[in-house]
Each structure stands twice: as structure tokens, then as C-alpha cells.
Amino acid sequence: MMRENGRVVAIENDCLWVETIRQSTCNTCSAQKGCGHGMMNKIGNGRRHHIRVLLGERVATDFAIDDQVEISVPEQVLVSGALLVYLLPLVTLLAGASVIGQWWPGDFMAFIGALCGFAMGVGMVRIHAQFNRNNITMQPVLIGLAPATGYHAHQQLHPS
Image (tube, rainbow, N blue to C red):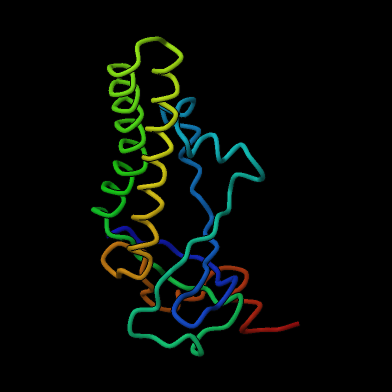
């Protein structure tokens, strides 16, 4: 189970939107040039992103904007999610190119088949994401309020 702290940026009835700060491991990774996270880090400020976190047994009214919370993501979800997001569109792209290339010969038709296959794979990933949107076994889950540490905790305890 991977745990991470974040700040609540939005509250909905069934979930919280939590802003997390991505750790700076991208600079030491050997795959940084070909990795999606490395490219996303270079867009914008590259340090913060928002995650939809299910509340579990908790109630949304227990939280406020800017609360520091701790969330968990099962490692199995990270691995299976990465495989699904990266591998499924690639497999459908190759299958589309192969199937269309068999029926209608020519590079252009194989290209069209590849595009259709890729679009189908991306659509399948999107449908899977929507179907499992509230599946607690496949989404980040709220553990609770994070212990107050550092400068912000000092500010909250001793306001100026």
C-alpha cells in the first residue's frame, strides 16, 4: 500500500480532490526521456497534480478546503492501471493495423486500421475508468487527516 500526503482542493459528496506534490525522482530515473510522467512534469510546473480520493466510511462534511490528508493507493492498482493504460491501446493499435491490413492491402489502410484500433483502445480505457470510478478497490482511498508538521502546523498552532 503506497501512502501519500496531500492538500484538499475540492470537496464533493462522495470524494475529495486532493493536490499532491510529486516527488522529484524523475531526475534520477533512467527512463525519464520516454516516460509519460517525465513529460507531464515538464508541462506546467511539473510538481503538483490532483487526485480524486474516495471517502470510504467518512463523510465529506468532516473535511475543509486546505486540510492536509493522508491517502493510500494499493500497489496492485498502480501496476494493473499502468498496464491497462499503456498496453491496451498499443495492443488494439497493432490488432487494428493487422486486421484492416489483411482485408484491404496497402500501407494507408493499415494506418487507418491502426488509428481505429488505437481509438478503440483509448475508448476501452475510458469506459473502464468510468465503470470503476467508485470502486473502492481500484481507487485511491482516504486514510484520514495527516499529522500536522512543519511550518504550516506551526502557523496553525501559533497564528501571528
